[in-house]
Length: 306
Image 1 (cartoon, rainbow, N blue to C red):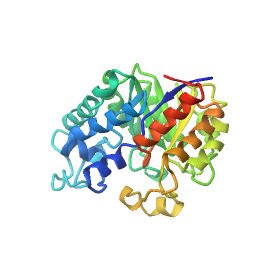
Image 2: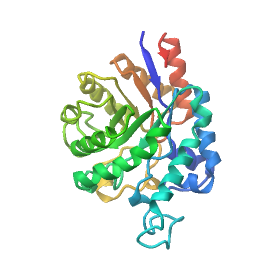
Image 3: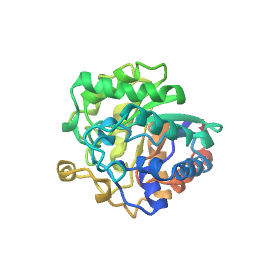
Image 4: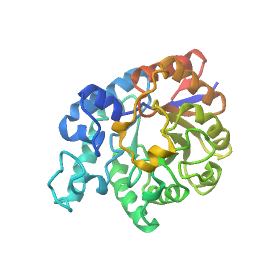
């Protein structure tokens, strides 16, 4: 039997569900502004469900997400937010503080989402700029976390820039790619996942996330040759189509699949584990009940959750 790292589940949709709000451009970050205590409550729920890694609520914490009138909170602030660096530091600290309830029972992964928008390969800034922007967030997170986790990477170049930025810290760097919902061997950009993995030989783990669970078996077959720990955490969205990605990426336009029950999702995860995955969990629309079901299945199969 294997030692399995059990990640938590989605943060943004769970926060929206608990707060009764709707998605904003700041998405889960909005909760750090409106009600930080609810973020800690979600981390507690995942830890109680059996997760051994708490992922900070910092996915959307980038300068481009905070700048201008992109959110209800910052509407009217103008093109440049006063003391943007200070605001980033404050929100990142709040995101890390919210994991305190989970830290005593496991590790903390510092989440860094994509620049521009999720799934959008066309919005990546030039390499040097991307490394600087990713590096700023990684440097602020690193002293407060055990792992730097770059999530929902849509292109080969983005993976390379994330790794370069993460390597500026002294923390392990995990890279997680988002793959096509219909073909798990290619990224959202259409590039081959195998080529993406080959381009980042220095990563400490390679994963796939925020994709349909049915696409992950093909991805596991690719990741197993990476020579480092691998795994995945899928979403529970109805298919993220190419037309949706081309037309915009507002999370509020996506809806949950009714068929992805905790038992069904746990069955998907056990198939990834059978393929050699040792890092598993959930992404958007995968909640504490799903993580608890995974923990139960892992324990029943004799795996050690670490």
